[in-house]
Length: 268
Image (tube, rainbow, N blue to C red; front, side, top):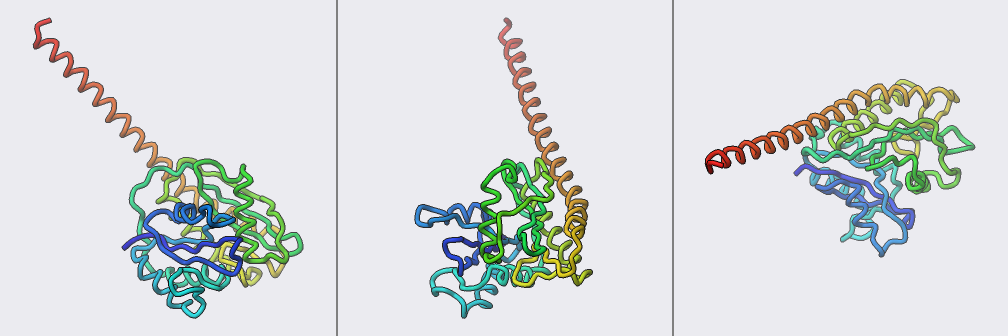
């Protein structure tokens, strides 16, 4: 069964992560769980779309079985970064299936954040929304919520260094862009000793050797890889819209011809 395997966090449960699967989007699953029974919202820390989500979920549950909070719940007592890195590890060689054609999401934003004023720690990420996240307090609240799990001692309100917004991207394109983002960051981590994930997830850039330009270089490199995917996605959407428009025009013409034919037959 194809679907998403996700890792959710919630600041109300700082020592727990939820590991699960869904045939919907992880974001919609997080919203479902963020009901009146929880003080704060669930956040998608990481997710991946695979063709065997049941198997991947079961493997993760087995790996962390000793840290399961209760046997009948999908909550585990471990750091989010550990769960994220393990999910990346066990899915890196598995075929990630393309999702079924989906309605356009609207926006995807690639961002570079500085998340620590005392140390050189940065975040490169991708978020999606029907409108721009970076213009809303909700986006920063989401990042704050995420990093309280990783580095609450040194965390401070994030500073946006770079941000590029892609318009008219669909869910298929976003999944591909996330895959490219992770692969690019993995490549940089292999090439330089100045990067260290440590207790963080793969999208967090920790500089041992201070080079202020490096996070922006990584960002620009990733941007150059993501732009063709985003443009192709926007082009697909335009083609779909044109096809719909052409179909509507054809239907309107056929209806007009039918009426003319009816008038002719009636002898009016």
